[in-house]
Image 1 (cartoon, helix red, strand yellow):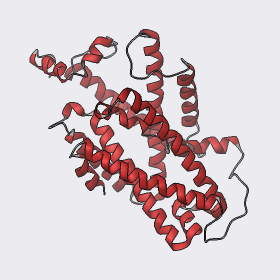
Image 2 (image 1 turned 45 degrees about the horizontal axis):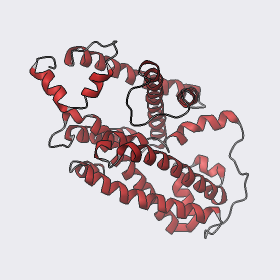
Image 3 (image 1 turned 135 degrees about the vertical axis):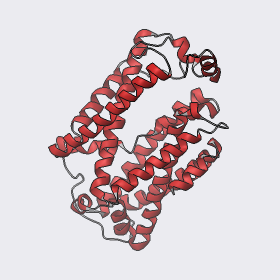
Length: 327
């Protein structure tokens, strides 16, 4: 499946969009239907009588937000391809917001279905809780249906990941397709799949490590917004975060709290922080040498807004190479 997604993305953004539209429609539609069936108690399985929540302890709830966090990541993947979107200034932010709200509603309906057909104790013990729900809801048919939903979710995630991350490598593009990024991201996905070796505990650990990594990148994005608001408050922008500093500060505090409570197991928590820290250290060292010796730019000095905007034009790099500035 990873190879198929990789090859499809090599044909450009149109193929990515066709795959994503079809998969998203089938995925969201299936989840809504299965969620409503469960929430209304219309399944063929036995309805379970249990408390509305698995836990009311705030510490338990916060420790699971890192997993819930994964339901909402990736909305920003549309930004690298926004240049190919009609009326991007309006449609990109609007699409991101609608997508996040829709995901929240769909998952909330699914939780109600889980409550009616899946015992909380068995849910926490299961390596594949979504399949357990499908089995309990509609028997064998529900299990196969939920398997299809899971496959669609993976296709959607990989398709957006491969397209979004590879477009960040647009400077390596050939024939308007960032082929190097598409192949690199796809191979990386295969490597992590091999490392996990189908182990649910290994997959869970990698998910939590990825969560912390992603959370830190979001914190940095919030900090960027605050800095730019201070330094260049009147700079042109496609979208302005509402409520001034309030939302970025809430985002920073909330995300930091999730990182500090990423796991209830102290040993696992330290391991997650350690792996994430090593990854950022490697990336930091690489970035230092790339900026200083490849780009020939000062590492710890801010770049003027005019030059940042000029970087959006391919001629910027052509001129730098011609002048011998870019190696």
